View 1: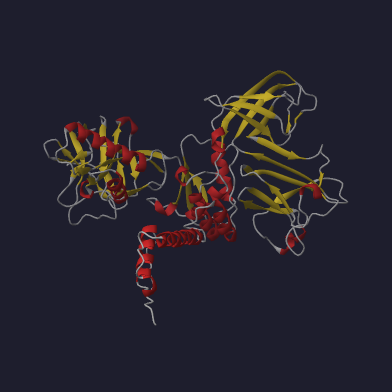
View 2: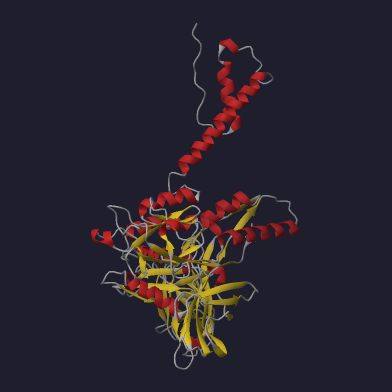
Length: 583
């Protein structure tokens, strides 16, 4: 006798749907059609089958997600996926500081490496810093030194005799394992004395395969593991010398606290390894440069760009990837890179880097030197100071409760403002990407009984300008609002240098260009146009210049055409919301 063989419906992956599909399938079978599936022992079997199917579906979904860089969530998976791209996931970077020590009376005239310094933050948290090399003391008993923060200084040197390699290194795999994820690779130093050599020689970290001539070179590679790092030495028929029994090795590195140790300016010498009289520790610059381990999202962003750059700095994306990979910066929002062709007038052959205010001259110069070594010969990197500006957002929203009291409406208003502020408004960042559609979607889903009005949103720049500052120039990189029937004032009323009171206005007609500069126009409070040259604006590029025309201060307000805003160039943006109302 033939039985129905209609397969269960596929596509539903939640437990209840799987169970329902299994039950429906079994009810079609004549052999067991009289069972009470909802109240018999059969129900237990169906539950087990449903659970098994559900867990297996979940497991396969997780496994398949971890196979691709875009969807992977586990560090182990991401480390494995970026290896073919030639990217080594780093640990945190140590903070460092420069000091000048005076009052040294040591006859050795050297401050030895690994001298310790105690440091304390303004919050009372203590850190330890170390010198990583020897420093000479001048004839005046002073020395300028650089110190590096470290939770732990690991120095495997066995009283400077080194260790037999077989005690530290797996000679079969040619690997030494560091089971600590907080190692700063820039502080890693490997010294080897081959059997027959009389001195230790420093081996160099290699980031790529190099040339066939590297086969006999004293180099090593670093591989990231889920719980630390592996130092990979050479193997037969591969690049780099192999370690062999009878060789000696010394290894040194620091484990780092990352960005937590930045901004320290109080240092004291701990157990000095030199003689001194009236020892004074003078601060050259407070601790800086400490970076945390990159996030999973940052690794996903960075690895493909580094692979495409292949160590070259040609495009601005190449430069961004190289700076983050070298841990010169910690986040894409901490700096900006743009080409000279993005400026008006353009400056071809230049690439510009901008960092947050307060970055030291030494850190800036370090980045420029780093880029000069990697940029193609026709591109010159330059530094430009950041420009701070405030972006304001205004909108309304519907509240479904028409009978709400005034207090309820005020509470809902504050709830919406707080949600938007906490989830979308960021301050003091480069490369801002504000999308009101995303704000509406998320807010409508997570704040009950509200619906943001997309048509009501307004984005605009506002700033008070002083006449003593002369000419002003802004490059917003976003199209400025302008149309034929809605010309508008962009300033409050102020006194021009000709003695007249009035405002500046963007006024366009059918012949006005939106892609090139058009003049700004001025009008008195009675609506009469004032003759003169007051400035110019490029509507599509969002560039505006206002000449030295004012006797008194005024408020400049520039509205933008679109509901989205993408900051460009050297603009650091702070976002504020105002004028939020319930309709």
